[in-house]
Image (tube, rainbow, N blue to C red; front, side, top):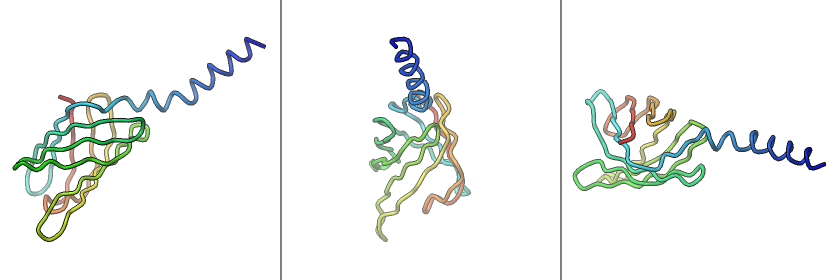
Length: 123
């Protein structure tokens, strides 16, 4: 009976623990590069991971710090920042795939920055 319980416990840990291990930990300092038709823009990001929830902030320069609100599902990262604008706040959504200390961002529309893609690497 004890052996069966140990096998069931081990199997549950492998099945249910694997997604958590695959997610890694995004907490830390990152450098993001946004590549659009208007050129390349680099930002400093600080991500904070709590389970599948991603928070933190992105420094876009000119004393503008934007809050990050997102999720990490396996290696799939999605988050949104809201850029203040005189014509109304501009939400910008980001999607990407995390692989170790790098993130390959998907193509998207980034408000007045234009359309393009992005990458990030841990500092």
